[in-house]
Length: 154
Image (cartoon, rainbow, N blue to C red; front, side):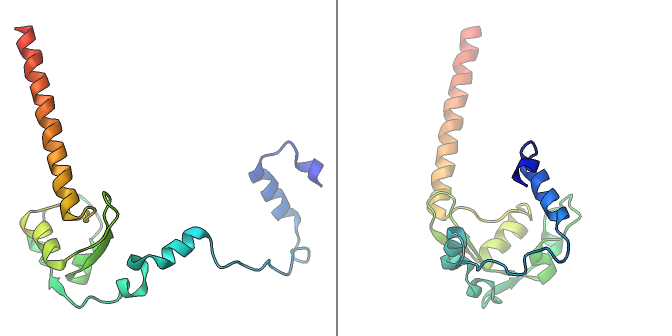
């Protein structure tokens, strides 16, 4: 049977094998499953993925959809549907530390600063400050380069 599949792709082999089985030829026993892949084990140990992270929040703030910035989406953000901002756990993209984006911070971001309703926190405060200073330095260097270039042309 292996020679029948030599010139075919893996997808075609799987499809032909699945189609060639009749209801009675399919294996009746399935191999025992292991405890999970390393990725599944890591996810289970992650404190942000525990069940406690998905329980209703103890602290929350009511959301006011009238104060949100307009968006061109057909969808509705979860906090608008829920009617309140829950504390949002996240892992910092810069340093990897676990953090919590509090309901008060979310309310400020969405309703007062008019941040996009589809954005969430991805960096802790020190990493945000570091990223902000890095961008300011890059912008300064870029503008100095443009100024030098314009001086050379004149």
